[in-house]
Length: 582
Ligand code: HEM
Image (cartoon, rainbow, N blue to C red; front, side, top):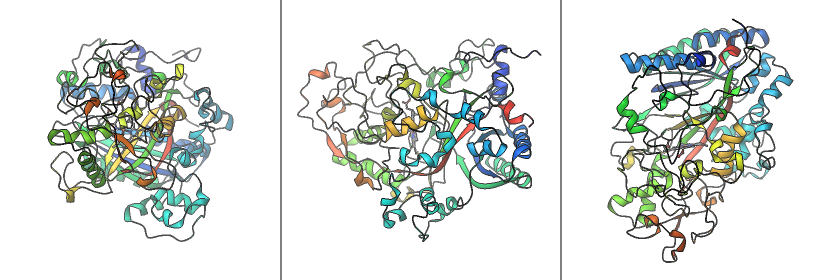
């Protein structure tokens, strides 16, 4: 086979047909789970430190990769067979490397900097917000203050406040010798303290639909490779939660994984030459129209050329991993308290939680409906600015630019304002991340079942949040720092007209300020009893002219139910790089 003469000028166009012959080589070189989720119900996330370096390490990485890594092509083939004949896919594997692994392998500084300096991706004018564009090279803890994970000023920290910090943060503080005495630790936190003195160089993700099989495979990986130069730092086990309809949910009980950027023709059932009708019923239920919000996304927001591979046209992707613990009891109590405060009754009470998330538990988008049970279920064809996917005004598109239906602080509105935010080409659509998280932890009862307060955990459960993107700076970090943690961030075409304080507050689910404060430290949010700002009316065609003075928002703090427990930035290298000899 002749080598391609030049590197591809760009990536192929999406949506990509995974079965077209011209895409085969690229998909064989790309790890699975990036273009499309692996879909398995159980995962083992094995964090490892390498105790060898150089060529020896390169060979070890190659051995692990040959044995475990699933390519995007294999994943597509397996899902086709599953849909046709019901045969499950084999054990799924991803192998991700942190910057320290590249250093240990002896990858040169120049190549590292050419590959991982994210300079090109920092939008003009935003250099000050992200002075270090090399997030991946420095690792997640270096960005701690930026992301709100650790206090901005460690020296000002009072020891009593330190005792209430999550484990990884304490660990970082120990490392910096800010405190010398180890406070009493909960069992959960001890696991992360084991990180003391250890370093996460890589993560092997194994996934399967059979939990016992997955655990045995994890055991054999550890047994075989501990002899060859790895040390296990931590293992996080993910376990999908499903509602009665079989849809994936998270621990607060809401349908998750609905709105994603999509890259494959098989996600749309278009242009597939073999004309398989893949799970047609599910498809109709899932997809719906895409004229107002189009989930098709360019590969540029997902893939990054792997310059360390000696095969041209090899791609990888940055992988962000964060263990986020959920306090389900306090979240549920806050939902009830907010409903009480707004005097919501009957079916309307469900709207309290929906205002925090932006969707009801069943996935109904709040901006489209004041109650759940909306059809088509889990619709995703909406924006908040009355426009369509091309940016033109459209009467079918809801205009909620005042945040009277879906509050600005709602998680899905903060993390996807569905509108360009005035930075030209770097508008919000290029900030989209491709989420691949999975819940963790055991529950007494499935979150979908009726819950007594005693059934609700205050910790020990949560989300192993994970996402792929082509730039950490421009996508994940920007979303967390500049949108979720930013009390002022909202997108509104009519600023200041909602009669409320200009402060929006932090994202109700994931916002965190870098101040060492409890819920009281975050500003309160605005909430409204009346959907759409006007009692009895669900649509307000000309909301700008309305006198809203009769409808003052209620102030209530809805935050701090999700705690960061540790994580890292990784790169998902191309398969040729992982398997090439030193
Ligand atoms: C959407 C929950 C963490 C970014 C959602 C949805 C839920 C949810 C219920 C709506 C369903 C959907 O559209 O898929 C949670 C919980 C979290 C968490 C419980 C933590 C425990 C994060 C983090 C980020 C994030 C850390 C990024 C920094 C997003 C995005 C969407 C989303 C981009 C889609 C919004 C849209 O396109 O409309 N999340 N999430 N989430 N979440 Fe999260």
